[in-house]
Image (cartoon, rainbow, N blue to C red; front, side):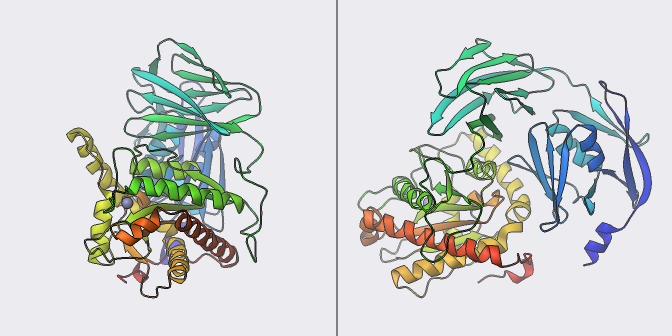
Length: 496
Ligand SMILES: [Zn+2]
């Protein structure tokens, strides 16, 4: 609790000037601690017309600014901006609803959210908006109607910083210091929800059909993209979900829970292959679709990271989960073993250290990315290193919940299969690293075992697996809502 005391101690009061070219300068509260200046985040957010809230239970702050959001806590040197993890030099300091952060926080989090580039001058204690040079960025849009949602994907020649401005019948994405190029400048679309897209200067305007549509904007990397999911507002009910049918015994929980299902592999990445030729990527997709149906029938809101045989990057899967504000993330895979007799279900959650050698090998094969150009491979390696630094920041805060979910799922599958020996394992699965929610990876069966390969392809297996997983989630949420969250203690999680 030493840390808590340090975090709440008052420093020496000073004042900082926030200077902008378009408005008169304002003064921000600030404190000095050990020669370092901490600026009041609340003051800066207010000056930029944003809002900020503090959640006492999770001791975390949420900033809303220009249609974007950032979440950060007091314990980790990390902020989650929309879907992206941003690493900081030090955690913010908090005193109740007030948060105090070093200038770096404003340069990496607050500025980019507002579409501003900020500079800090220590001598004059001035935070100022920098006028940047104009970059030429090309935009390639595509629009697809997917059931109740329309997805607008904007592909950029370089990663843009952006701010979002929502209106009743359109959304405008402001890309500062950029000249955006799209040919032609205005494109009409046949979509059910999107009428047209207009690019002018540094602005992209997406014009809706109708006034009751709500956009959700998030970024994906490699290649740099912004995704705008447009759906009807007002109802949080899952698309296509039947009226909520309580599970036997108790219903899940009061609020509709969002489950992100991740069918492992896809596209050029086939995953493991059975002796009879069944591909893991096909098996996981078919199985996950059945799980989706069963969960929706039970009243869960389900988001899938892929709906077809598509190649989806591991980071994009995590980004989609974060964009959907997942309550739980489940990645579905089929196991592989040199021993043809290996069988049963294995449930994993994240650890940098594998719980045994087999788990380490499995993680290595699941983390493998398909045929990459040397350039992408290099970029991916860099991202992986970053992830390994960030892992204990994003997934770490959910590890005790992930472990609890994994235990429930493993126990339910052991009961289904009449197995007592399989226990939950830990391994460094990259797909789980960036997920800002309780997350597990389930290896449902061994595709390399001829008997299990046949079972995996059967309707009965899909139905049983889906019902079992749904039961596990019911149990998880039922107990999660009644049990106080237990702070994760890294030391307690040794190798098992
Ligand atoms: Zn797999």
